[in-house]
Each structure stands twice: as structure tokens, then as C-alpha cells.
Length: 592
Image (cartoon, rainbow, N blue to C red; front, side):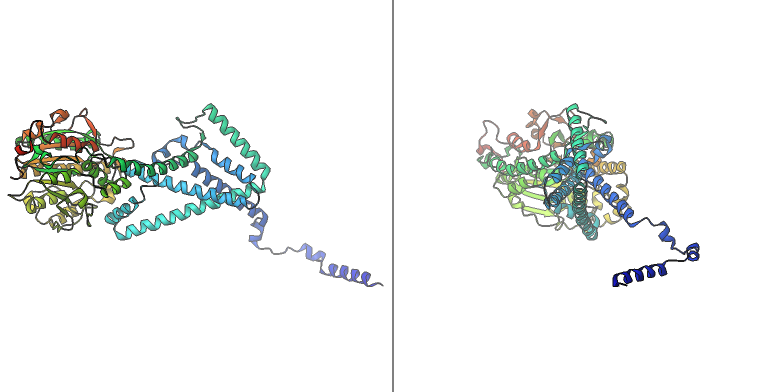
């Protein structure tokens, strides 16, 4: 017998010996219950793969149709859209060879992740500042946002917020990239199906675009929002860079740069001039039915009290360069006579030699003072503005507690100023004073008390203890609106009472808002107008602005003139400058 035949017989014998007997075959073999119910490994992989692909498609679709304004989530048409960018991306992946597919997928995923993050920033900025995020000019504001969270929620809250943001950024970028890689992989494995789907999707999109198909409201089904959004962002970057050149030209144009000191503010010589900003005091506080009743009541009663005290007043409207925040932009706009609507303009302004209402007042012989109760650190811009002295929360002797963001109540600030700065026999003053008790989050709010009880501010400890907390207020938008209105009423009551108690024949106060509050209070699309009032006992002061056609009293009529805030400086200097036919030698010397 040959070796090969022998080996074959041995192998066959061994197989027969290993086979189970008929008896063994009839016996039930014990099996693991898990093995009976578990799907085959191939089927499990297919299910997981299908789930991953579906999740990737949903994630990218959501990112492509994602709006950058929170209110649009409430519109059904937002979700019934066909984004062309997705089909184009798949088509590109099918066209490029080899490893370029992964490169295209990574670039698309990272790019879509960046757009998603910027849309998230837009949502936040639109909700707080009533405008989208500026990719060139707004990065500095993130530091202010951190400081705000730190002031209102403590160091731990601020660190937690930063950590959460970092995690969110990493998760968005990672998931978008992985989703794009997954779809690229599946498209490469099923080229024919992917190509047909892409062509069909593009065809349907073109038909919807040409026919203007809309399922809900006026939102078109054919969406190209991500492409247009990226284009708008690129144009915003270009505009931001160009704006710096434009501003460099604007800052050099100043009608009062060469005006002699003896011709400046001649109509206010011997007066104490206050420019008092009321934080977040906007037009809506006087006209929104949910906000106006309490504010209007304070103004009506205050007007009667001021009239009894011998005051006259006129009021109008100014359009602020900002909304929801960025008070310093409004302050600098009013004082410089230039439109300062972003941080780049503010930075370039304060690095220039532009004359402000304050520095021009200094030239005219006024003692220029800044009282900034909201400032917690040095104010290097004080030199640019032309202040002789700057007072802030660090040097006003306050011994009471903070009220949310506000380091000290407005009534304390005015009380301290009257006791320590506005003393008898002082030189004529020009005082800029941004009050802050009506700053977001509008809880807790201090109560107005008798001026004799203010003292060093220790009395406010119990007042704060009894006040509402921001955590309970911000759970209900209606409560937020109510507390905002109450904060405005508090500050206006304080200012009116100060004028009644401490004002004299030489007091001239310009009271105005810096900007409207956040959209959570006034809604989307609210105007940027703020009230402005000039109050004085000397009727001649108001006679100088008769031509402005402002409303008599401390509440502007709805039809009162509206100016851009940057127009105020020149109009004010013109109204109170040397009258025709009056020479410098005839002016009354500064002093009381």
C-alpha cells in the first residue's frame, strides 16, 4: 500500500472516531443562554455600522441647518430644509482619489465644527448684546465675560464655565470630524449608491430653489445657509480690518480742536455739570407695556417734585452704539463725538489725541472728575479722557456688601460724593458718573433709604439679605423683566432725590441711559434708543437748547427728536459755547 493511500485511510478513520454516535446525537447538548440570543457577529457589526452612519448624517445635517439666533429654533421651517453643502461635500469625496478622501473629510468636518462654534457664539451675543459675534473685534470681550461670571458666581463658577466651554469646543470639533470621516468611508464603500443619492439631492435642491419651495412660513427648503454664513463671516473679517483705516481718518476730524478755551462752554461757566449714565436705561423702560408702568410713575412723580424744587428740564432720545452691554462704548461715544461700536475703535480712540467733552471742559476751567462705582481696578484711560481725579469702588470707603455685579449701591455713591467731593466752596465741576445698580442680573436690588441712614454702607447688609436672589429671578423671564424695571426705578428715584436734596442753582445734570438691556428683557429687534434729559434750576441753561425741540420735563415724548449718540458732543458744545457777538473778555470767570 502506498504511503499516500495509507495516510488517507488513517485520516478517514480519525474523522469517524471523532464523529458523535447516534445516541450522542439524540441527547440534548447544554448551551449557554447568551449564545442562543446573541446575534451573529456579522449582524451586530452591521447594526452598529448603520447606527454610526445614521448618527453621523443627523449630526452633519443638524450642523448645516443650525441657525445663529435662538428664536429661530421655534420656527418649524428651520428643520424642513435641504442643505446643498452636504451633497457637494459627498460629491467631492467621490471625485478625489485615495487618501485625499480622508483629507477632504477632515477639512470639511473641522470647518463645519468651527462654523457651529461661531453660530453658538452668535446665539450668545445676540441674546446678550443684540448682535452677532465679530470674529475680528470681539475676542477681547470674552475676558469681560469671564470677569462678569467671576463677579456674579465666584471664582469657582468662572473656572467651571471656562472648563465647560473648553470641553464643548473639543467635543464639537471631534464629533464633526469623526462624522465626516464616517460618511466619507461609507460613500467610498458604496460609490454607486452615494453618487446617485448625491445627484438626486442636488437635482431636488435646484428644483426647490428655482420654484422657491417653502413648506413653513417664508423659509425656503433649498438651504445654502452654511455657505452664506461662512461668506458673511469672511466679509465681517474684511470689514473689521477696513474699519480700522476708516476710524484713523474719522478721529482726525474735530470741529472744536482749535476752539480757544475762553469760547468753550461759556453758557455753563460757574456751574457744576454732571453727566450721569443710568445703566441699561433704554427706551423700552418707558414704552414697553411690561416695563413702563413703574418707570413712568417714578418719572411723573419725580417731575412734580423737581418742579416744586425749582427745576426745569428737557428730554429727548439718543441712539446708542451698543445694546445689552458694553457700556464703555456708549460712554466713549457720547464724550468723544465719534461712533464707538466695537472694542477696536475704543482701543484706537483711547490711544489717540481726540478731545472729549471732559478734556474740553478741563480746557474751559472745570475741575474734571470721574466717579465710577463699577470699576474695581485702575482706569488707565482716565488720562485720555482728561480727568483730574478718578474715584472708583476701591477708594470710596464702602463698607457694605456687593449687590450682584454692582460693587456698591447708587445711593451710596451719590451720598459719598456729596460728603467727600461736592463740598462747599469748590471750583466748578464737570463730573462723569456711570451708575450701576441697574446692571444685569438685576437681583438683588438695593432699596432706597433715607439719606441720613446711608453712612458707610454697612446698613446694606440687611437690605441685601432681605432682597431677591438672581437664581430665583432668572428662572422666570417675567420675573427678570419685573426686576429690571425695579432696578431702573431705584436708580431714577435716587437721582431725582439727590437733585431735590443736594442740588442748587449751579447744578446742571445730564441724565441718560447707556444702552437698552438684553433681549431677554426687551425682545429681539428692539430699538437702540435711550432717554436723555437735561435738568437745571437756571432756566437760561435750558433756553440754550430750545432749538433742539426736546420735550419739556424728564420723560421724552415718543415723537421727540432722535439723534445718534455721537452727535451729542458737538451739539452740546455748540449750544453752550460763545454766543454770537460775545467775546472771551466778557465771559464770567469760573468759580462760585
